Image (cartoon, rainbow, N blue to C red; front, side):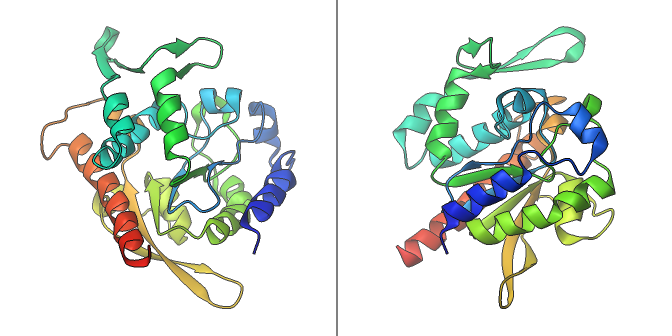
Length: 252
């Protein structure tokens, strides 16, 4: 199978999708995916945010910034470039107990931070990013079931094509949708390794899935002390990277 060609065909198929009237009005563009077709880690977020909708790349805004910081920290033990870039990540307390997350200098046109973009490019060989749905919702509302169902075939085909070693599911809605079970509690399953069966061309293929709390939750209380949600989420991301490295050590 030519994985790149399959992903390009999927992209072109859904690029001008008109199946969800509300999403057609709220989006600037569809945001398909980013990363290598041979990535060993596949990350599924909920939906594009404002920054993602503007530039056409998934998980490049505030949530992606935190998630990629965790990934960069996990990869820093094997690559000095990550060690240098993680030092640029800063958390500053703003007004009304809000926190600002900066990572290098800000490009005001794209709203992307320089060091985050450098990390994203370094991660692109190992990580493929996509979302449950391809369109930004109005006022960042949660996608409804019909919208998720409309995108489910595309997501399954993406997973099957990339064929990752591990999937990171960002948030409870993503987790419930992947397993087609309503109301899976993210606080119950966070950090665990769950087996997901994806129908393949000839047989079902099982993938380990590691659910994590959505970064938007972590933004409200960025305590890095041991046992906090921030700490546990970072350890869950590290677990995904460890699974990837174990696989490469066996099959390299």
